[in-house]
Length: 284
Image (cartoon, rainbow, N blue to C red; front, side, top):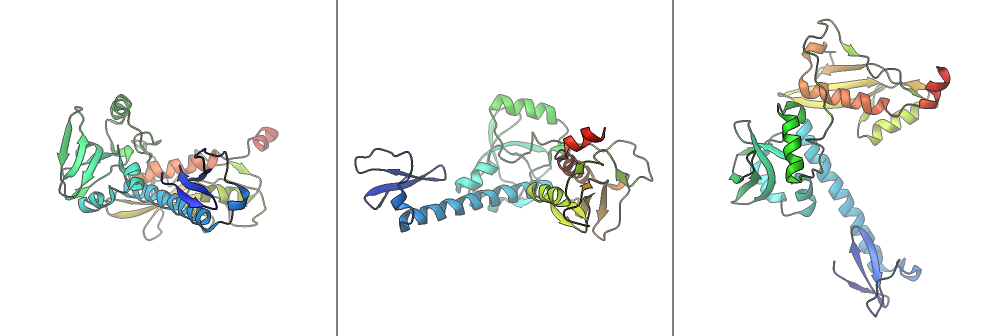
């Protein structure tokens, strides 16, 4: 944290906030009102806003790599690692080597050094795969064991990987079924509340559906939950969960891949969790 002179005081950024100290070096509880429009203070606040957007973008990008099963060139990870925002979201993620097997928890990266990992035996190792893969947790066969090991290591993941909720597709779904109704019927007083919740959770709303696209095994699958497309202020409720392919054709449940299934169920559950409980209790 570096201090900069401003109007007889010194200001700096601390944990994303502008802080101030007087000429004697005593830190003040707040920035004096007369400094509110000072160019230095304004610049620091703009910098804090940019850093917040940057951190959010890093988090979104890495989560997208995981959800969409996108392999990332080693050079990209090595290049962004020195950036504290990138390092914060990449550190401690479980990554795979070129053979697709779990290599360990990511702890370090740098040009010419490859990836520094803690492997599943607790040893520090280095690997240099051409592509870095961040597996979705539903694809990790020993997820519970990995979670326990992560707790032992004191792992704290910014991206929800190991401790992300996962749903597994039933082994023998109805061969003709095309929808899941587990989270159907969640009541919202107004459509805009449900649409707003979808947006807040990071999902797009299109054609009356909240949608979650997933790229899995080279093909695009889109999970869809019906939320309504009529009057914005009219009451609505969550509808069935379905999946469609890249051409918009509805898939049967047995055609849905494990990642698309898990992410679709996660979206449906999250939307349903915001339902109007009081309205349900009154109707009961």
